[in-house]
Length: 101
Image 1 (cartoon, helix red, strand yellow):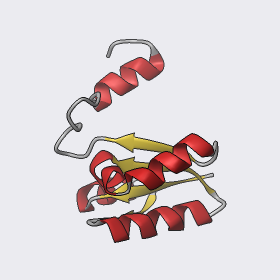
Image 2: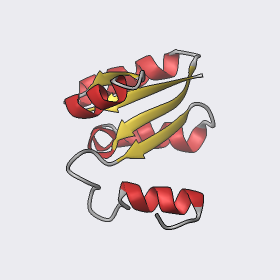
Image 3: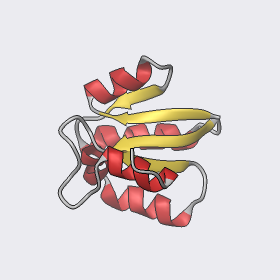
């Protein structure tokens, strides 16, 4: 099982440094193309996408998240932080593990 990262330059570079393949997406067309690439690779089990990029293609992301169980699509904040009304990365981790870090 592989991970696939979709986001800005810095996010893709950072994940790439630990061996996660990814694609930079700066507009809706690039984001849609990257998502299709990830979904067409049967080895990809988790797609990590930054919140701003997910917003560019929100209908496609939501349609896939709410209708499919695999691969898992995970939205994370980019380096500017979470979008308004969204939890921080720390809050998401705390909620996932049930312990405040």
